[in-house]
Image (cartoon, rainbow, N blue to C red):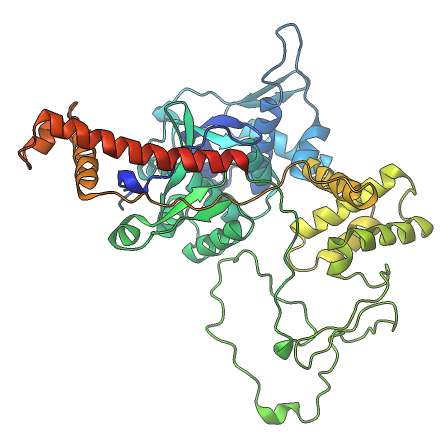
Length: 483
């Protein structure tokens, strides 16, 4: 398989300097070894997430003074992964026995040696490293992405994220470059997963703004090396959550399929309608499940006729809908009802916990987010709340009660626009690229073999090319800083 990415100089987006939230340098081969242990069954997927959470916990203490001693706790790892203390302790034991030099104590956290030693690698890991270019380098992984992977419960999403990081994110000339060409078959082969799951996970990452497809990704290069993508280095938690798109014409009252990540099975090729005579004696005017009917006036009824829905009723704990989780005012009304029912403490802390549960349900409840909130609330499973859930809940409460604006607007960076080059500038660009591949110090010697240019003509054309390319790079950098 071809693993070498291809970019002309004009196609390269401008370098992006600072990473929002900072980044952690993690060796690529170390991540590959962790995934190989998961594939071989030495560790579970929850253990892989815990290792990433431990790396984030270690990065939080990178600026400690020399006279201060770090302190690590199981509770901190719980909040980073969203797992219970029992699951975290079991994962720590499995990682310790996995043979990756992992150790955990309240005063020390060792994630394994950073020394590259092929003598202890398994054949599966060796094949994986052979398929990954520059696997000995240190990957500058954004810490927001690191926390997102620690909370992600889908292996296909984690593999897709790591695959795009391997191919797109590099540390070059003191700056972070986050663009590259990635093929879905490359990720599927390296991580040994279904290619259909990779495409579904990539679509999910584009929807949440973590991955940005670049323009001009077609042609022969796209078929050979894959499409052009850029990793959003200023990625943050989504401000709003899209409602699941379910066609009202085919709604049968059952839970809709998750629009998110594919499980590896092939979907139906097309929607086959029922025969017309089957509808003669059926009552399909209600979307309520069999055996339970919602009370009128307390929950909204959705019409099935033309896909339009009536206004929602008052929020109630007896029938929680998705709008009760996305609308902060309705969420706070549910909190008051939960406090009256004795399900949660009626205090500012209890309010923060309840909204955090709603945030957790929106992120992880891909099929039935209201049902997940109801279960977490009635079973007092408050330990599933992560730090990101609590931060997002605090921002929602401040905006609703105190009219506090967002600290920083999260916008998707605009795709890079290629600069328009003249024929001479394109010729200079091609000579520079050939000189880099042949390791020729002066591209003028390459140009002289094609055109009878003098040194003065070459210097003039090269100066024009560098000015045009520099203006495009500074324009993108200015737009990134203003965002």
